[in-house]
Amino acid sequence: MARLQTLSSYGGKQKQQRSRNGWKIVLLSGTLTILFALLFLLAIVPVISPSTGADVADLLRSIVGPAPVAALESTSYHFQDVFNQVRSQLSGGQSEIQWSSQPQSNTGTTAIPSTATPTAIPKTPPPAAEVPLIQNIPTAAPTAAPAPVNNVVADSPQIGWQAYGPEMNGQPIMARAMQMLDPTRSYTGVALVRIDLSRLQLHMMPGNIEPSHPSGINQAIPDLGMIPPADQSSLIAAFNGGFKGVHGRFGMMVNDFTLLPPIDGLGTAAIYQDGHVAIGTWGTDLTQTPDMIAFRQNCPPLIDAGQINPGLYLDNRKAWGYTGNSDVTWRTGLGITQDGRYLIYAVGNGTSAATLAEALQNAGAYNAMQLDINQYYAHFYTYTPASDPSQEFSMTGEPLLAEMIYNPHLYLTPNVRDFFYLTLK
Image (cartoon, rainbow, N blue to C red; front, top):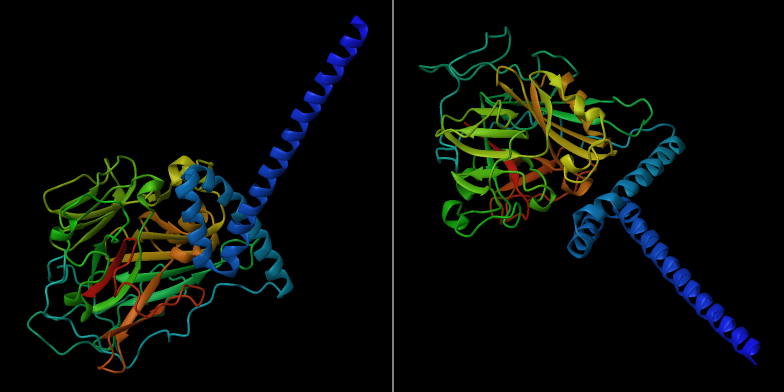
């Protein structure tokens, strides 16, 4: 009898163990199914629809937080990279980054400076340092203080610069070039735009949601999230800003209003009362001064005093907004030449942070920082007057690259995320 009870008890324990194992298998299978579904959403959906992919990532971040989603995104970046390499091989090694249909230079367009005072940045005369005249290049009509001749296309370093965007008095004020730096990825490239800061004024604008900000911002920045109407008549170009606050709470200040406080050691772009722009590392190259009216931080510097940050060649996920600096994805960055004359915007369709830095260094950047990543958030637009004055918008935008999200009125209406824009001085 005792033996039968023992056997019965043993059999019951076996059934309980099998039941527990069964639940473990079901739970593991369910977890794996969810993970594969998430990887599909983050890897395949962005290829088909970048906007949907961005929405899915934001939804997941709100549920599980940024770190787990970043880990999944890293895996999805790998899948996307493999997919893009295969697609490129099937097409004969064709590049998948192309200029938009916009001409290299709007030859017939003469941009006329506005008399309105730009928001956040007071109008200032061109820097005192003038560049020598170049023979056979037409200049503006003589005045008491002749405008400097623009060398944005001809100046060194020469990497194939071509005139780009609206012109001023028949002369280019921006130039663009393309670099292919990764021999293992024929589909990738880094597009660069060189911007003449002797003719153009940089502005910063927070998004109407990002970066997160305290109350009272609308009093300091009335046209939050959009290019102010007063600046639109002299608008030349605009481009994306940096990460959301959840990815590191990188500092930002505009119109002396601090959205997020600065953090030492981060790459930072700053604008001053006299209109000049600086890029450097906060706490060493840059600190807050009374004449600094705006700054934006985003991750460690890409280039510091002409040297690429050696940390870019080491994996460090947390320092880069949870996205690994070695992950291959769409990335954007901003640099400046040593003399402060040229601002350089860079965007790559499949690049690590190190490759982005190499492209900026080749273009002449002495200091540089990373901006936002992912295709949906990579924007560089130039603007020209609308063909029909009766249209709702007086300006029409055109993206730098064919692969950028197309919205001819981008930044002319309130935008969720922060951005930079350029007006004529």
